[in-house]
Length: 318
Ligand code: BGC
Image (cartoon, rainbow, N blue to C red):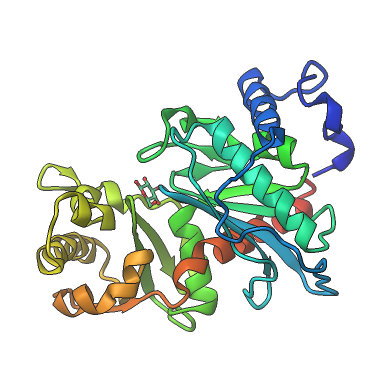
């Protein structure tokens, strides 16, 4: 990102001079205004930071953001160790989850983190988001506001945050973190990270290399989207026992296994804390293990994936 090209603080609404599409500029301006609006209590789990500014020294940092169905989480991340170097923030996901409101929440979180940790202007922001993401543009909106359909999120967020921003699919982000630092370390061959939350996310790795945007939550089982039965939210929505839900999840994993013959399934999402309730009931041939990084995988993986995309863009002269 060339910071010289970025709008200055007071001209977020002056778009005539840039080639940003009107809708993107409009949403960025709305988000900037919303982010600045005084928020008495944004229900941040991390609370107010009262300590001293954290000096990361020579560590390579990124900011990771994980947008979920119920919460938006964020922290500064050491890109080499995956350690969180700021408090872990969590605010409720705006409802409706329209782009301007979500971008405003992210902007407020990033502002807080930059008041806690010394961050250079080029420290990139990675955002894990529950949609197909191609070149920073969201290409689906299954469990989020339809306003995200075909939305150039990278451009809008760079305007508001004034940092390099890269959006990635949330399951891909969690998968990157698990493969580098968690249950997938050293795992070759075909490995899936399946994340079970509001929807069912899937990330495919072959010899550690990510094949992005695999949407196996939307493969058809019994005439409808598989995630309608396999997501963690489906168990609660349908009032199922762990045993009954495990059978539905098993059906989904068996269908994936028939198509891809993976060696390993890593199961992520909050529900992985209760792995003992369902993993022993699964009948797939592949090994199934819970994710190791639990809640932080989305944040850490988004920061790592964004830093890599930024490095690639810089190397390509972009
Ligand atoms: C979305 C995916 C996402 C998954 C988990 C699905 O409904 O289509 O992109 O990874 O939910 O959040």
